[in-house]
Structure formats: C-alpha cells, structure tokens
Amino acid sequence: MAVRFQFRRGTAAQWTAANPTLAEGELAYETDTAKIKVGDGTTAWTSLAYGGIKGDTGDAGAAGANGANGADGADGADGADGGFDSTQTIADKSSNYSLLAGDVGKLITNSAAVTITVDNVLTAGQQVDFLQTNASQITFAAGSGVTLNSKDSKLKTAAQGSPASVKCVSSGVYWLIGDLGA
Picture 1 (cartoon, rainbow, N blue to C red):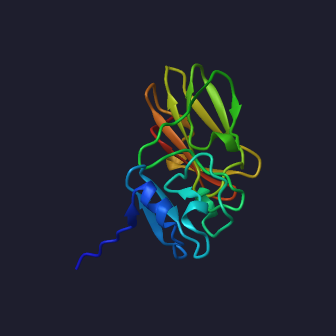
Picture 2 (picture 1 turned 90 degrees about the vertical axis):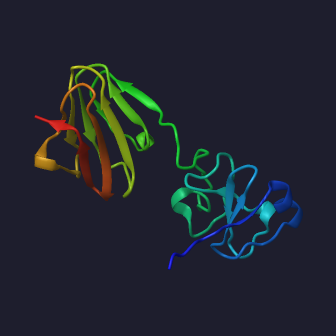
Picture 3 (picture 1 turned 90 degrees about the horizontal axis):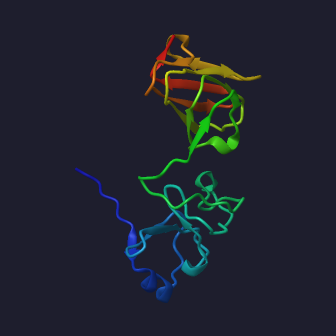
C-alpha cells in the first residue's frame, strides 16, 4: 500500500484572508507563489516565516526547532529562494586558498595550479564543490585538526574537466570525492 503526503494548500490571498494557525510541524503551500510555511502551533499564518528546501530570502524567521535550514532558525537567517533547482556561485582561484565557512554551496574553479587547504570551517552535512577548468590540477590539503579522507588517499583532481567535492561528515572529519588522480 502506497502512502501519500499532501500539504495544506491555497493561494497567498486565501491564506492571508483565513490567517490560520498551523499545527506544530504542519506544512502549508501557496499554490501561486510556490512558497511554504511550517507551523509552530502558536503563530498565525501572516506572522510565520516562509520556509522550504533552502528557505526564502529576507524573512526574519521565528525561533524554533528547524534551525538547520533557517526556516525557523534561532538566528533568523533564511537561505536564498530555492527548491530542487538552485544556482551555485562560482569563484575562480589562481593561488593557494583556505576554505571559509562562506564557501558552502559554491563551485570553486581554478585558473592555475592551486592548493586548497581544508580547514575545520564547515559543519556536518555541508559541502563545497570544485572543478578543474584547465590543465593545472587542484591539490587538496588537510588544515590543522582536520582529517581529510578520500578513495585511495588521492588528493588531486585528475584532469581538465574533473569535478570534486569536499564534504564535512562531522567536526574535523571531511571526505574528498570526485574524479581524483595522482
């Protein structure tokens, strides 16, 4: 037997006019804006922040249990409008570089041979993507207090066009995955 989940749904105008208080964890969908809100059991619709896969830009966000994606985060920061499709910011590096927390979700390319130092700046579940865009390889090195794992201990991209990603799996533990070579 298949199980199907459906969100409560209506247009933005319908939700605003009704102004319901959603139950804690209840999801509701605006059919005309493709935005969702997650109920906390006490806040009326018009006072709830928008949420979603990556959140919605500009909402303050109420303190809540779902702070990981910012939809109800205590810090109030919401992510960019998103869904299952998103656009990465691309940053080109032409000299050695150490990862920053602000690099999460970016695609880093290289215009020269570079060494990327993986410092312990990401939290579990976060990642940064890389693409070797010319003949010069990208080399990865573990920063202080970081364990950098990879298949066969390879720490360089293989060739032009090779993608790689650095994923944090727990504090200080990172995995380098992708098209890696000598």
